Length: 242
Ligand SMILES: Nc1nc2c(ncn2[C@@H]2O[C@H](COP(=O)(O)OP(=O)(O)O)[C@@H](O)[C@H]2O)c(=O)[nH]1
Ligand SMILES: [Mg+2]
Image (cartoon, rainbow, N blue to C red):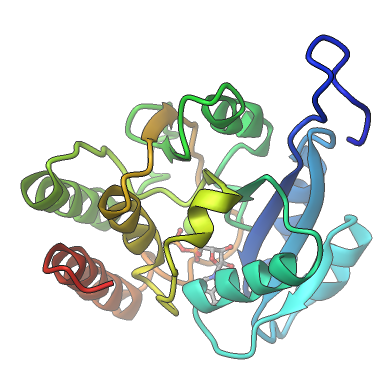
């Protein structure tokens, strides 16, 4: 939206969305159709050489496709952010997965604490929200409990989830120097936000069974690597490394 807010005279915040996607041609059209535009300004699909029609359906759905050369969830998000940094960065960036597990229409709820200047980082918590049975796999729930407990012990802050659906104020986010190329991405953002004194909050979000095949927690390799990487990430930043 480019119109001004007639009550305050201020321009409304610009909101861009980054979707990491690898072989999500079935689900991505539904994610794109359900994202509310406005308030969303631009949608970037960060694609790692998908072998299906992900790039085509992304363009058909009105998204811009950004190629992430290094494979991995974090690397895809970094490629999306790099594009935004060079092309009129937004006031707020929202991350959401491309598998239609999240409910994109809940974006308005996720960005609200930032728009009301009550937070810099908002985590959509699937633990506080409604979950379809079987949507959050047992290994993901267990990993969440362990990681959130460790964060509480090491950083004195209580999160309930490391969920993918989240919003962050661009200017604050840029201070964090995000770098994790794969599974540590969500944990890195949450612990660095605490280390940098950002105002963090959670809102409940709904979660349903994904369309298509899981690339991370639905596989043994993904679960083991993600578990290890998340715990290592929580530890390493507590020792003062940035
Ligand atoms: N670009 C890109 N996206 C990825 C990669 N790995 C996972 N994703 C995307 O990240 C999101 C979460 O992955 P998903 O398979 O749903 O993991 P799960 O929720 O743990 O089962 C989905 O949109 C995937 O397509 C990757 O290596 N590159
Ligand atoms: Mg998923």
